Length: 619
Image 1 (tube, one colour):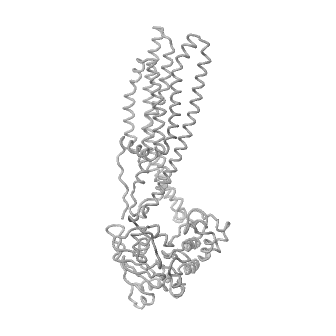
Image 2 (cartoon, rainbow, N blue to C red; image 1 turned 180 degrees about the vertical axis):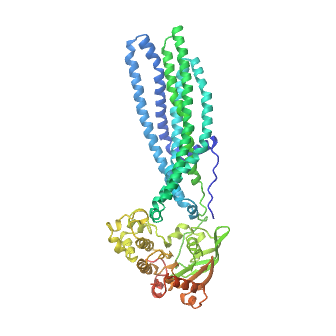
Image 3 (tube, rainbow, N blue to C red; image 1 turned 120 degrees about the vertical axis):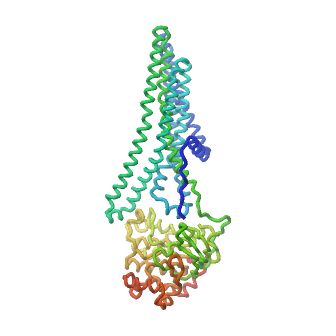
C-alpha cells in the first residue's frame, strides 16, 4: 500500500495555458469585479503613460517652437490631471490585487488543508510533514502570482506597449517600422533563455521545499538532535541543501539576467538610430522637432513594458511550477472513502468481531492473515505479541485508517466498511503510546475529545484521569499553553491529558495502544489507576508490551507474525508452560521488564458495574 505520487508532466506553453485556465475557472467568478476594477485602473495607468508621450509634441512645438503662452496653463493642467489619474489608479490596482492575492492564498491554504484531512494515513506515512508545510507556505503563492502577473502583463504592460506603439506610428510610421526590427531577435532570445530556465526552476522549488522541511523537522526534534549529538551532521545536510538552493538560484539569475544586456543593446541601437535619422531630418529638411521628441519619448517609455513582458516569462515559469505542485496535491484522490449510501454507526453494546481479516501494506509482506476473534462488549481484550506481529495494525484497521484486504470487521453487527468513518471514529476513544498534544491550552487539548464538552465535563474527565492535580499547579491552570507537542509537560502528564481526552469523548469503545509502555513506574501506576475508571462499561482493546499490565484482562489474544496463535485468560494461557504467552512472560521476567508479582496490573471493573453500563454510551 505504498503511496504513489502523480507523475511530473513536462512544462510546456500548453501546460501554462491549462493551469491558468483552471485557476480562472475555479476563481474567476468570485473575483471578476475586483479584477475588472484592477484592470480598469491598469488601463488608466497605461493610457496616461501613452498620453505623456503624445503630449510632448504640443509641448515642444506650441510652447517652445511656436512660443504660444496662452496654451501653457491648459497643457500643464492636462499633464497634472494625467499624473493624478495615474497615481490614484496605481494605488487602486495595487491595493485591489493585494487583497485578491491574499484572499487567494488563504483560500488555497484552507482548501489544501481540507483536502489533506481527507487523505488516508498511508499518504502521510509516505510524505514528509515538513514538505507539506513548505507547500502550504510557499507553493500556494504560485496561484496568486500566475493571476496577478497575467493581469498586470495584459492590462498594464501589454496595453501600455500598444498605446505607445500607437503614438509612435501616429507621429512617424516609417521610424516606427524601423524601430520594430529589434522585435524578432528579442523574441528569439527570450525563447532560448526560457528553455534553459524551465529545466532548473522545478528543481529550485523542490530543493527550497526540502530545505524548509528539514529545518522544521530539526527544530521539532531538537531534543533528539542534541541527545544524539547530531548537530554537526544536520548542519552539514541542511548546509548542503542551502548550497544546492543557492546554486540553482544563481543559475536561474545568470541565465535569466542575460536578457538585460541583450535587450539594452538592441534598445540602444534602436534609440541611437532614431535620434540620428530624426536629427538629420530636423537639420537638413527643417522639420519641427515636436513629433520627433514625442516619438523618442514613446520609444523610451515603451522600453520598460517591453522588457517587463520579456522578463515576465521567468516569473511565470516559477509561478507555474508552484501552482502545478499545488494541483498535483489537490488532484490526489482519497483512496479510502465512505461507500455510497454508507450508514451512520448505531452501536449499543460495542462488541467487536474480526472475521477472517487479512491485510498487507505492500504486496510481498502480509501483516495480518486470516485473523478472527471477538472482543466482548463491556470487557477488556488484550492483544499481545512480539514487535511486528500486527498489533498496532489491528487497531488502525478497527479505526479504518486502512481498509482490510479480506474479511470483515463488525461492531454490534455493523460492517465498519459500510458505515461512515466519522460516525465510526466518533464511537471510539483512542489513547496512543505517544500522546500528541496540539497547540493551545490544556483545556483545548482535552476538549478535542468532544468539542461540545463543557468546562465542568473537562475538569471531571481530568479528575478521572488523575490529571486535575498537576493541571491546577500550572501557572494558568487549565488555560496554560502546552507548547509545541506538549513540551512544557512531562511524558506522564501528557499521557494523562490524552486519557482525559479519551474520557470526555464518552465513546463505547476504548483503544489503548501500549498506553503505558513509555512511562516510568510511578507515572505508569498513576496512568493505570486512571485507566481503570475509563474502562468502566466500555469495550476495551489493549495493545500490551508489558504483559504484567494485562494479567486481569477478560480475554487475551496472542499474535505471532500476523496469525492468532493463542487466546484465553491469563490463567489458562500460563497453564501451558510451552505456550507463546508463557514464553513471553519468562523472557520479560528474566529481562526485568515487569514481573507479574511486583507490577501493578490494570484491574477490570467488577462484573456488576460493567453490566450496568454496557448498553448505550457511558455518561
